[in-house]
Image (cartoon, rainbow, N blue to C red):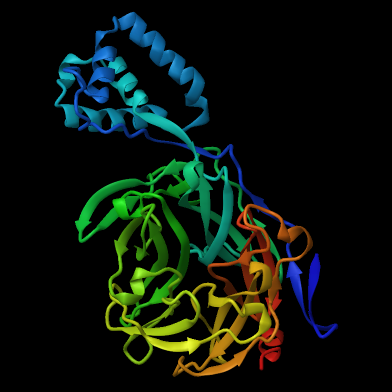
Length: 437
């Protein structure tokens, strides 16, 4: 169906809304480690809880251990893939921490111990929102005018902990969108190693598709969430490409901006960024260097947009003021809605604005191609704004995106609705630019 953006009661341009809507889904679960502090002090001469649980399993006779493990598999094995391997991995961590004697412990008891230190987690039970989108690394087998896409989503589960989920699909020819099906099982990516300075490397399971992969917080700085990933396909000066994404790491009390890096969506590096601008959220990277520098859009004062320049991807200073709130729909504050998109006319930057009653809307500006500190045009009215059924949800009156993509003369915009669901729209780029002042 199509909706219409209005300006003074007259049609400005058509926004083609897809009928598909992604909702929070409590049935999407993964098996995750259930963390009980192994170093917990013994109480009144008794062992800590981890040691007590392990000792209790070891004390079971073999038939009872087999019966208990069979019950676990009856309840959970059909709901997850690789359940036995996950239990083995969790047991190995407990074995190393407690210095257990593996040869003396049966495989049944090893897996039962692993099961006691795992739990089922519904990673998108509370909300699904704030998508970003890039051209999929695999564009094989498509008809003319079509593009395979990969989309990241902020999934929120128990404890309001945010993780990164992915979906794949095809857009085009024209204003058409097909979302590929999800696999029946989702699998959390595994931490492979620490790289130093707070960076870690994680791997997608070798048998898991991208749509079945979830990136969870893994460091202390990320403990309460990986929020609002803004993906971009980055072209390096040597011609190589890499997919980069800025996101907010939330510890539960502090935030900082971090950078995801991948060349194949199988191995991911999650690393902190440094500098004054990185102590805040909402950073979006340009898809290539300009004038030999990396450029970023930031909002370090929580109110205005800044243009940041750096000779490194991991360090960002204060930058220069680029945009301030101007129109009524953005009077409270403005921010970016993903990485700038390169057009012949300049850099198209989607923005969000907050107006009266804390209503969030999405707009756009056009920046000079050679000097992005120059603003060529700016939408006086929102491109997308919460209305009717789009107003209701976990956080009402909010539409928000972390990135769109160009397909010929169309802009495909996945966007979060009320911090609860994800909708999709196509917009004519020439008409969008023509609406700017």
